[in-house]
Amino acid sequence: MRMDTFYYNEFGTYLRGIFGCKVQKITIDAGFTCPNRDGKVGRGGCTYCNNQTFNPAYCHRHLPVRELMIEGISFFAHKYPTMRYLAYFQAYTNTYDSLDKLKEKYEEALEVDGCVGIVIGTRPDCMPEELLDYLQELSQRTFVLVEYGIESTDDATLLRINRGHDYACAVDAVKRTAARGIPVGAHIILGLPGEDRDALMHQASILSQLPITTLKLHQLQLIRGTRMAKEYEESPDDFSLFALDDYIETVIDYIERLRPDIVLERFASQSPKELLIAPDWGVKNHELVDKVKRRMRERSTYQGRLFSDV
Image: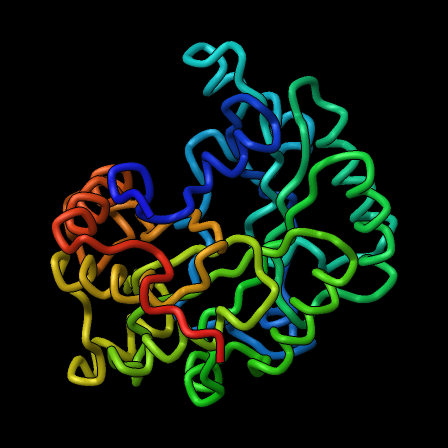
């Protein structure tokens, strides 16, 4: 293991290995809703969720998918003329509609020049077999990555944040998707109420048993207009929000316990300042990445150093 060349598996390197060039995700808000909002699973959504935090400036919900792709590409193309793009269906639950409507939106994005694949963000309880049939076929002709919001491996936490599914549901969805030969991504929030450092280290080991290809780690953020923000206002002692240096150490401890081949896409979320209550670190995502790498170098460590396949 050469520590001057490897700290962890980076998402950009993973994509470059597939496409041979720089690839950028274009965020698409295709107008979907969520079964945890419309009453099928629950009402009000997850306690931490405000989807305004996800959409970049170029992403306008009312536009057709094709126009969203074109606007997103124009945002980046002047900097990187040879770049290629992935349509990232992100806001809310992007598999929560009829199969015909889902196909229409996905295919519309793929028809745009420069689009080389799609990334679909969704919930583990919203992946029917008929959709997997289609995605398996689609993956034979273009790149497809399905990203599941898992958020926690602890059922008590999932219940507390009103997630609307348990961890077994996530395990089932991930395994069914990976069995079709489709790369699977997972999203996890670090610092949810009730989860201390020991719980998070155990979580890294549990996640490593799943056939996931990519992983996103986000710090817990308190966002205006969410139920969790109200809970924090009423009982702040129930929350242990990360200071920046503490978060960096926790992320590195987590990475050390992950399966070595998992691709790490990101370590933090950066919500709009006008929506963010806490924690406000005042650093951009790329600055945090640099800090993580620097600290990993200082600690002479790397992804999977403490991984145990048990």
